[in-house]
Image (cartoon, rainbow over all chains, first blue to last red; front, top):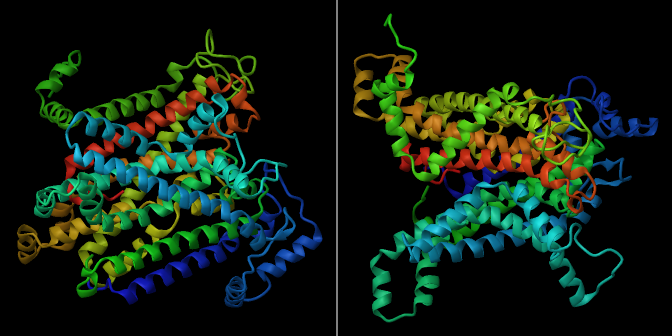
Length: 330
Length: 301
């Protein structure tokens, strides 16, 4: 593609950025009737009663009495100052609620990405090395099935088996209540609570990485330079992780970037399985009480996170691939 | 044609061309694909024949709450005393309807857009690709959660939102295929003989596109079913639909369910059916991709 140069990529990200903000801006305004009617509670839902003061706040916040372009400008200007509105359920600024919950989601997603890479790469190289033997076939079957089961369904099983059944892990939360662990004890506590959500998310995603590594490595293993490396008498380990893995790295980065969106979606659901206090759990709480400003804030942060991760992967790819500087590879 | 012997349809099918094709298709599938197809067929039969396979109402109480499986209640009852087997049979309808509806809408829409972009080229194609690129980095689930929260979560809404966020896959595949086909000798020749755009699209392109579109739609339906279950699990499902995801949601909302024996049926069965259907669809779809054209569809999802 002749357009795939650096500037157009950045333009594309900017455009996506604008689209997301615009969706967020128009959502409450696109609802049939007055956003108010809905903010005042849909029929049959648990209704949060709106006082006159709150109604006034919403009219003011959404600027409903002003022309649309001005509303939009005000909205965007507010966002750049970190103003995402005010949550009426929590009686707090949306941005500060989100900031408090964000680290947990970040911890979980980053942990799961790393763990899924470790599992996927090790299993993938192992499988490629033992291609077509029973070891490879067994691993392949195992990974295919795991990669198709959605993370939250997997999480329910792990929760019942490992947490409720065997009591190996805590059932919910991210920290022990009232324990006040500090230092090393505190880190251990956080890891213990985070283990199951991270393992769940990683297992559900490791399959895709495994397939990719397995395929790339099988191709690479047939190359001449691998034979040369063997002839030089290098250890198997060195060949596997230096010569083979290096060549599987680039498609891997693209893969992980493409998966980030699904990973965040999975995290939202998995957090709800384990009652892990990140943005996903917050999102469900916001849905439950119909706290729209909060819901929109979470959506924005998650969308920007995914966008940022993709941009990062793009830059990393450019940095790692020497070919891309000479010619543009699609 | 007049005297068709209906008593031996299978024998007739064996000899017929369609039958041969079906058998050939079956033989081409790997063991994974066969398992997937069987699961899928089982679920379709379950959904279509739900009223015949169940003997208790699926939407009202028919016994004491939380009865373990056995006797009249094949899979026990939930907290309101509603029979679980009936709920699961009728729940299959919801899942399959969501899968089919989304796949048809997104497949058709994405297909048309892909043909349009790929065939026209130029600005149309560039706009299409830009929009697709935007759709790809959009995190699906958070978008759907927020749309479902704002616009209400009736089944129709869910299907429409799902279709809105999944048309980019078929569009991308169709576009690249159309761009390749367009350059083929026979298409160029038809064009030089003065064939119109519509003639070329319907006569020459569509027959080549339908198989890959069908494969993409199998994949789409799987994703749609997963997402609907996820939305229901978050409490954003159609409250009147009683889908499997919603049963799981209710079960998990029952506090301390892990320490009661109730999860052994209330949570287990909807979980099992959902996992079976999703895995079956995925295995079948994976195999179809391999058969249709490994080069086109590889690594798309």
